[in-house]
Picture (tube, rainbow, N blue to C red):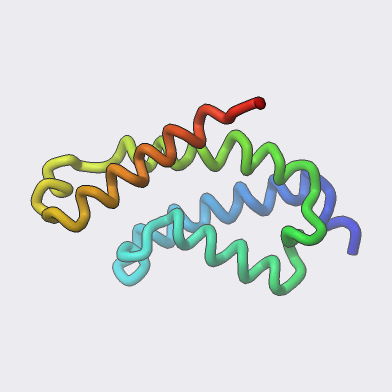
Length: 113
């Protein structure tokens, strides 16, 4: 079962999960979830089925994914926000968005202390 730790296998499965979630998010029922949530849920299911490594036996590839790709993906998700809809959402949503955006910016510049 050590093949699931191979970087090529893990990268292929993750890329296929992203493509599958993009396709699935265009369907009526799954469009409410969004592709980001679908890929997270699908990866969790595959990790529980032991088809993807979990955090206990994480390969080195996961370091690159979580250090570079995940923050970049969050940045691209923030670019898609329509400020007009955020204004219409009202006061409770606006501070939460600002806190999330500031947290993302802080995470994007790691401290090497």
